[in-house]
Length: 335
Image 1 (cartoon, rainbow, N blue to C red):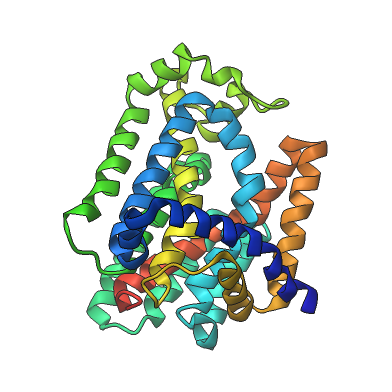
Image 2: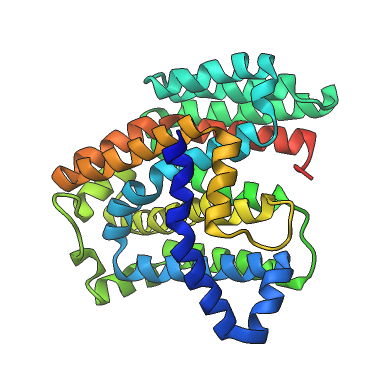
């Protein structure tokens, strides 16, 4: 595992390039380095603008390549910040009762089975019985709605879990100042754009759906993400999913890590990697790296099959995020 830890040295040139860029910014960089709230708000806003632009120009490329590049790293971040960071992995009753349904979903069990994990989280949360009962009522209502949706439940849950991650990030750390509302306003505006006809018309005008890979064209994405929905609405939902999925990855790979760090100043890339190895263990990082590399290699030969393989692997993590949201609401913020 010395090799895994030594890989941090490979990030030194990247850190050096960032230092040169910060020196070039001069006095403009100081507030960004010292003020976490300012930095996170501006980075989040930049991410939203970038994801909106990419969705308007090449949504199919975003849908096809995003999971291959960012999928496995974001799963590792899920485990780090939602299980290991809060110390839930040391609460054995929670691990066993909430973990079993999540593992079952990863092995192919139905969506409603996974909701049992949220039920276990609510029952075992360190909160009053009144609050836990309200959470159970909410989870029951969610389960009833998903049951009523039948075969469409998995698709609806997949769309919804992108927004759960945004909500988790917002509640991760107390926020103050008017600037905190800028990414919220941008995210709401982009969501409204893609749900409207304007976004679809723009993509059509710039031939955005012409940029696709293999057989993963617009017809495939309509079948995968909006089965049984008429085409005009389906295209809008596909665009919204492409945008929200990109934000979902950014939340777990940049925004929550920056908010979770105790020091207000950002860490170097090499230090972040060493902290990851310390938190998750070198073996876990090595396995995740092997999975990520294997997924990229698979995609070079069969992109569609690699995407399907990733989403089978990642099926559990929506329920993991739902458990984290339940515990966060019941037990309070991390800080």
